[in-house]
Every structure is written in C-alpha cells, then in structure tokens.
Length: 208
Image (cartoon, rainbow, N blue to C red; front, top):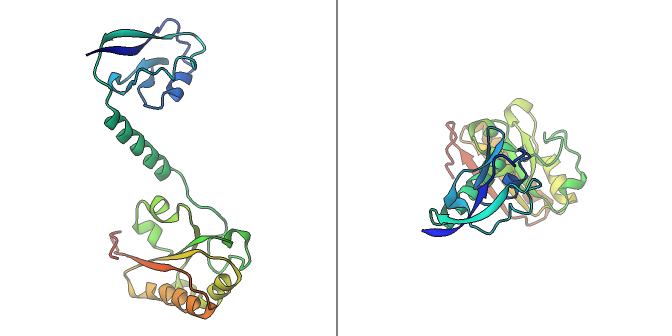
C-alpha cells in the first residue's frame, strides 16, 4: 500500500540515537552507528522522531510500504516491558532477613509483604518480577536458623499497617515452619490481614 512513512538520510545522521529513543513503536534502531528504519510495519507515520532529530536527517515520504501493524507493535512493547522487569532487581529495602529487619522500619507502613523461604528465589526463575515487584521482602529458613519467627512477625504485623501478606515456600516439609510462623503471627497480632500461601516444587513449578 502507498502511505506516509519516514526516511532517514544516512549522510546527515550523526549517530546520536535520539530518534530511536523517541520512537515509541521501536521502528528505528542503530545499525553501524547510524539510525535505521528496522521495521516499516512498526512506523505509524506520525513522526515523533522528526523533532527529536538534531541533524534534520529524518523526513516523510509517500511510498509503497507495509501496513502499520499496531497489534505487533503492542506485543513487542509488552515483551520489552516484561524483559525490563526481569532484568531489574525488585528488592525495595534492606535488610531482607527476618531476624535482621527492624520491627518499626518505615518501609513496613502500608506495605504488601512477601515472606519467602530462602530457597524459593533459586527455584523460581522469575522470582523478582512475579513475587517481589511491588512488595517488601523478608526471607528466612526455619531449619537453618533454628528459630521460631512467629514472635518477630507478630510484632511486625501488630506495629505496622501491613496491607497484605504473601508467603512463598518450597514443597519440602521443613518449609512448613515458615508458613506456620506466619499463620501463628497473623493470629497473635489481632489483625485481619489478607494473606496467601504459594508453594513451589523443587523444580520451580507453582503447585498452589
């Protein structure tokens, strides 16, 4: 089909990459140091890249081109956003060990709280994006620490405005200790805080 689409003058292009950043559809990329129209079906012809180019290397032209594929663009944008989350740490506070966290730490106020067994982050590949994002994270292992976390957790629940609690544990029996500690602490806190338990298999599958 004949439609309006951008063209890039490689002689004028100074390789700054500003146009590639300005193109929300991902139609422009840098190849050998020069801006290049990578996917003409990703170019919507609206020209967000034109005013961004300091060298005046981008113009419009009317020519035969693939139809703008909005569905493909949205799918690519969604994948890029997910990949960004995967690549970024979602840890919102420090420390993360239950036994080291201060009961009245300011990050607990209004928090969605994740309480996870130590092994879970190694068993589940997308742990940061799936479980930690948007939550305050506490971790522990009742077998290795040989302590009952329920007293500490009771004080955390009682002293702060915790919105929700998510427990992530492994399917192995020793992980039952962290689930038990959380349930005991919730009961002892005197508060009704929405909670859920997610159990992982040893190969990282979510069992429930």
